[in-house]
Length: 509
Ligand SMILES: Cc1cc2nc3c(=O)[nH]c(=O)nc-3n(C[C@H](O)[C@H](O)[C@H](O)COP(=O)(O)OP(=O)(O)OC[C@H]3O[C@@H](n4cnc5c(N)ncnc54)[C@H](O)[C@@H]3O)c2cc1C
Image (cartoon, helix red, strand yellow):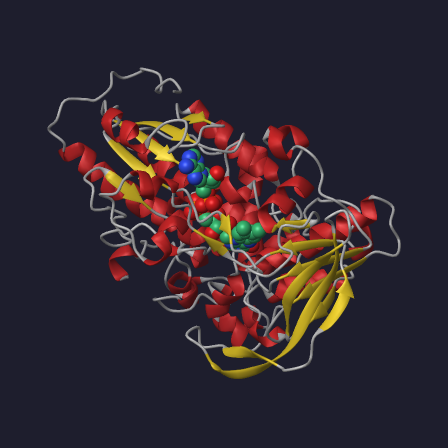
């Protein structure tokens, strides 16, 4: 890990030279950023956090006690952001410099500042958390990078001399977009193929606007385009263009296709009308209809009794979207319930998101598992049958496994049911390239996550299609790692250029 550890930037390592010593810093009270009131925010899909103002950001940054190296927060960050240096720069009012410290190791700090599970990463490692609330690192990261973006725009980069090499990126999520940015800076010509109508991956087509404004991703993609990165949307590799064709026509290819297939409940009634997979429900609830493919260009159903099954971040996004849909439709007696098979202690999603959901009026029913969905004569779901669970011995995940309680079945009304049961990889590309080595559940096998190299020369992969459904920050990290390895591969290539510089992308089949 140490060889990846970034050099300190503007920060003087000697805390004694700081104007305010550790003792005083440790006694500055925490300043959580203001949020929209729950009664107001359920009426819109805007971000819940309103963000710090300048004074609040400076004071919060002063709470960093500047631990001796190696700083736990840097070690706790999957991309090893030099957090203490950035916080010192914020404290001094140097917001652009602070932003550039985050950007030195991260391609989407304004995204991760908002939605990283900081409580188990940087903030979970923060020494201050030992006696008070951890320094609000995520919100400070969002503050300074937003400041730069809104006052000066994304940074101006000096690109490396053009190499004449062409790279295709499949998927424009955080893994693909980060790899694209790095490879563009290295002087390669980059084309990104994306199945959805707009770039951004789950940051746009998944995570709701009340956690992350979609405007940020739109600006990021537009900025990459000004540097020559080309996005070809509405194009599914493996269907519209074969992966083999990309391998034939580009000098290297990166697969950042995520793990997009929602897991099924595998119980009777799953195909009834009113039963949705989480991603379809979220995108239809959250996005402008014009940004959706024609086949799903309408809002999801809104009903008095809406049920979500699952316990992770996705389920919280679904219940909170459901509440907003009900309120926006003028419904005053709507009930949204999350059903989870373990207890709240075992829930994998962020505690902050659960707290927000509770504030917004979501009900929770723990230790229950669905048994069947029951429909009416028109084939529309009307009831949900559940069975009570109790916790048994720990399973492979280390969490106590839910065990059914015999004879405990019961039914509840449910006119809309959303399944948020986790995600699996899409086998389309892997199946069309039998030589490509796959691992568990069809995830792409790579040499190591620090190169992302598959067993096929010139073909790299990273993000959720290698790790399984995970986090934005780990996808960014793997996109960056793969870009480093791809740059080295491309520079060592002695084969003739596969395409002339400036040539447009392949025409669709
Ligand atoms: C609802 C939801 C909420 C989440 N909340 C959080 C959160 O709060 N914090 C957090 O850190 N993480 C969160 N995550 C997880 C996070 O979004 C993912 O781990 C991350 O986006 C993975 O990045 P990726 O680039 O690997 O894949 P993705 O973001 O999934 O991007 C893959 C892209 O590839 C495209 N694609 C797929 N196949 C093809 C093909 N054949 N041809 C062309 N394009 C293709 C897809 O359309 C997609 O745009 C959440 C996930 C979901 C579903």
